[in-house]
Image (cartoon, rainbow, N blue to C red; front, top):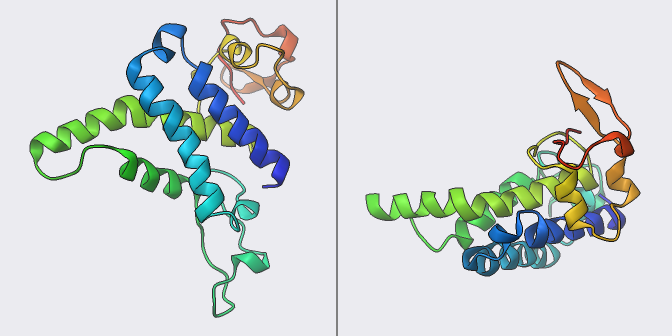
Length: 184
């Protein structure tokens, strides 16, 4: 992942956190106090703890091991870190509930489903679009992206969409309706 891809990932994820859902959902107190700050904090975490690894990130599940920064102190190529693992650990630590008993387990799962899932979606969708489209996050529409980018959806996002039938058929951005779901 180069610097441009990283900036795109970060920008997309933050825009999605702020505007990727309906106004009603985004204005909910929980969304304002959990999702938006969590996405911002995730990138602070990346820039502090993984700053030397960002260049090696290829996708959600892949990190390159062919650079000097990918070697451990013995000169061996290190495996990871994988963004999927970083996000899982981050959300586990960000979740205000802990695995202590049956009641707290339910609260942990409920928080993770409702709020951790949104953070996960912002980070995954942004990475997929900025780095390597994989259809890993589906379920948003062209209108959602237009709401995230009110001054116009950037060309790097407009390219590479397809119409999903039994196979993915390439489609021009201008031919997609605002209410149409998007597939990469």
